[in-house]
Image (cartoon, rainbow, N blue to C red; front, side, top):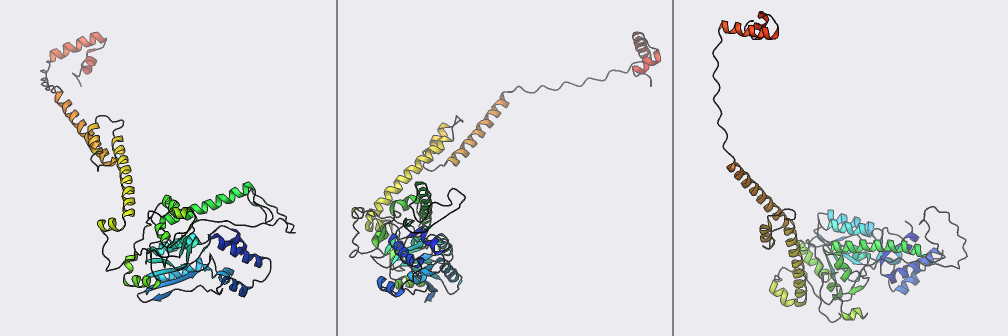
Length: 453
């Protein structure tokens, strides 16, 4: 994979950051030297960002700080943007998970996203390792696109305050072309889609459709993965998170992207005190008003003076009860109650229909099935077992009645007594009659009748 392949391939990154990178590297591809000091002056920050190894804080909390554009390997991105090598980051996380000194991990991210290559694998590694030791993703800058793709795989996601940028869930494919470049290009290809276009012409409609299909596929992977990591549905992610928007502070909490607000020191202290409290994966919670009119109109929500939620676990925190939740979060409580009521009604309707369907093609059990359908608990499997038992009982009763109506068996007749043995004279008379009838001699007749051996 070359640098040009990365830059012209699909990205999960804030679009303005991608344009900035492409402009920087266009200079490199022309053979001109990149003026790093001038670039530092324009960006207002140093460029020499080395990806750090994890450090261990008191209480066995490993902190892995990652900043910059994400790519599979460390390369020129590291000098220009403080890039994140997802391969190296994965190795660091695996080492921390295997380190007996480490009890929990903070993944400290500040990134606009990056190339899609390596991002799904990085997220999968975080998800798998979070089942061994609690991992919490934290950002005090940006947690966007590919960075959120990976960060959402942690057990929980926290931010530092109201202006942190989160989201930008989407995929972008960007390219430029120059029809006046005096370059003669000749291509010999085989395969319909081997050469979609050149760098000196726009995409044809067919080529554009192929590229769009690829971007759509990557977007579906992104959305489905976030739904899995945040323990919600694809439909909820599409409705609240994944329109490409960048959320700030409370907006990100309302959209279900973030679980709370904390300083890094507070988060480390909480993990050190009770890492088990972060072992259970947080579920995305969507607050009413996440799609407010001001956002729909394009105006950013003012969160500078708004108190942000901080659902971090505390040992001295009063337990949440139904009454306290209803009082303190009335809009969310009403929304959840309406959703659960609708879901319960739908599930009950499906249960009733499934129980009644057991009797199709097997008449005679309507009363039994009606009773079970409306008892509020019986399933289709319960109904099938009940009908089977009723069928067996019915057939056993029918067999018993049939046996009761059958006539009694006839008494066996007495065995006939043996006839008295014949005298010699009777045997000779029988043999003579047999000989005359069959035109044979007397000796043969006696043998045929069994009177002589």
